[in-house]
Image (tube, rainbow over all chains, first blue to last red; front, side, top):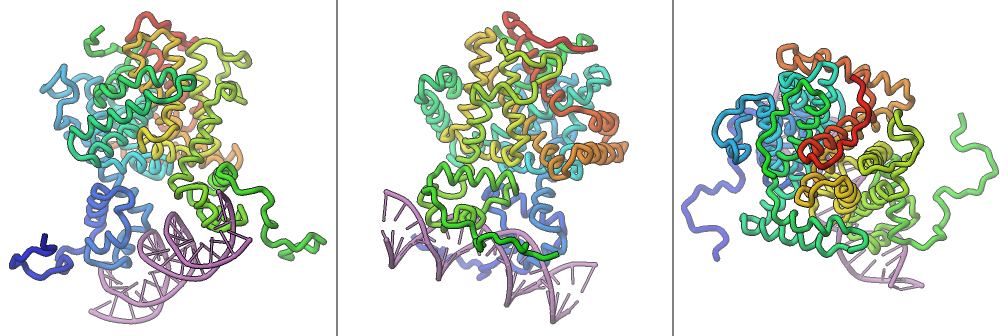
Length: 263
Length: 263
DNA sequence: ACCTGAACACCGTTCAAGT
DNA sequence: ACCTGAACACCGTTCAAGT
């Protein structure tokens, strides 16, 4: 009812004068928070300087421009996601193998994949930013970071050296494509709030597919039901396993390392 | 030397009053041209209205806002790319099988994949836009369009119905991820002009990878040479074949349809 | 119904000036 | 060396007014 509570709180309208010195790290940290809270449009130099209690010139002393800032934010989040000790995800990667730490190269690739998958789920703006940053070319560090953590496992799998680049690239591309697309659902699920609303969202999407033109979209209509029932993480893992099985099929020395598949 | 040539040309500084009526199609067409010419930042309401010889209000009569306009541009380009008769690409999909029209489901999936791959190569802004549009959710038509053209071939491959959704999703995700990442190189290659410059660009990127920290990036350094030598389309095709082979490995009824692989 | 174009709020970025 | 904050050019969008 009353807009400002009658509490005896101190009368600070703006956050009181910043005590910490401004550093690039603090700026990037604030940028990530703003991106998480408000998406890409939630980060402007106005919102950023307000949160940091400073002016634009101060920020420009530490970062070159907004592109640089977005790149640094992406780098920071990706680094945390693919860091070795973060690849044991909070929720277990798959239900068939709940608690034990990943041990085989296949499992570690799955862990890296889920690390990125979850990072994009938690920071939906990452999906677009990864595409942008990676398409920026060899200057950036984000592509090598991901590539390295995948590639080490490709090597450990026993893929012949002549195919390292091809196999690691294929895995990287699948992971980025799938995780990016799933950022969709995560973002919307969160925007909609509860898990119940998420189910309702999938219901809506599924219905939309089911109502497509029967002549133009027979296949999409036929799988509309699956869209409603599917589990994002399970689908994602199945795709990773397709690529891994494909690598094994092309390179017979590589054990296929597949999980027991039902059916 | 002289800024405006001494020709007897008519004194039209601005393109003379538009003769065609303004339609949504013409607006989208102009938007695509501006995006192709100048990338994402090349399309503004100022550049657009200048090219169309009109004002912003006129454009807003036909499109809801910039997001709507970008979505329509993406839709138009994707529709052209996955149209059935455009899936016989201008340059042959792969050297081992040059001229004959695609006939097997595997070949048609490869054709759809190359259709998108080439579209992103020709319209690099598509990479980011596809991520954005697809993450917009079930409202859009771009995801169903691609999904449908892939899914029909998945069905034709003999994948059991219970796995249609999983298999088509995996293919879609790989294709979007790989094509998106490759937009990078295409955009830069074009920015750099000639093919000679493209080779030079790959040389630079390869060198950058080779100079990464040996402790942090041993794998990436090891494959730096491959980055220089690799062929984008060949890599892309190898990844599609990994996914197809993986699908075949998981579903034994499906013929693997693989090309002869050397090695 | 379709178009015009001035006006508005907001954005990223700069820079002379301070400490 | 680091920060301030007014100012600038430009952006997407609106809307009263025209035809």
